[in-house]
Image 1: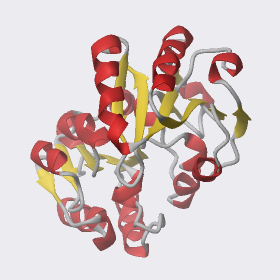
Image 2: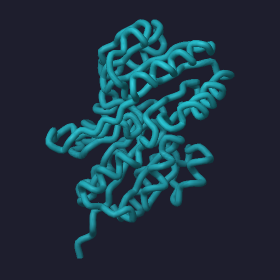
Image 3: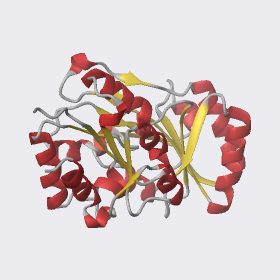
Image 4: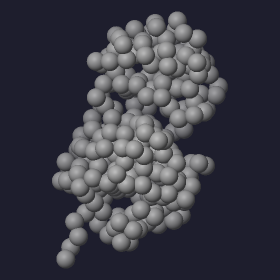
Length: 270
């Protein structure tokens, strides 16, 4: 009997990637075996495409990919598949910049697909964002931004992060969703309300006609919550945050212990 294919969604940082940002040989082997067995593997990450394409190529994928936590979904190998880009309105971005400036923020940056705009010059952050060689513009965002943006990041002092987030929830709840990055970064990431990895994954599942019960999604952070709730198999990594572990209906080992590989091997009998 032919087994029906599963759709497997992999988060990158803290999930597929080890702490040194590489994919272990065992994880690669099991992901490859899953693909050879007819299952569909895709990446769903908060990263832009430019800094996830290296892993997409390393795994030899030929599927659509979810970037910016669902704000940008496209198919790197098939332009006819369509591009889904959900943006934040420039007017709202400018209002947020005004308020953020009143707090003691380190920096703010906006991303429009592969172009990165820094409010202030910032060696440390430029380094973090330079993977994939984006077009970088530095200077007042209110002057430099001429169109709607994919996402905004606010890098603030740890003590101010919650204040800024409560402002966003009070004033802009209808239009933006925001999340906090994992330590050591005190970064607030802002995208359009209702945008998350599950929305992106749903597009891919619909395209391949895969029902929820045959979706396996792996994650470790709060940007994986919706995706793990949506998937029939919502798998929390051993290193996942508490909140995600409580939402997940499945669990596996940590990203350092090949958690993805162990789970796929067992569940798909690879």
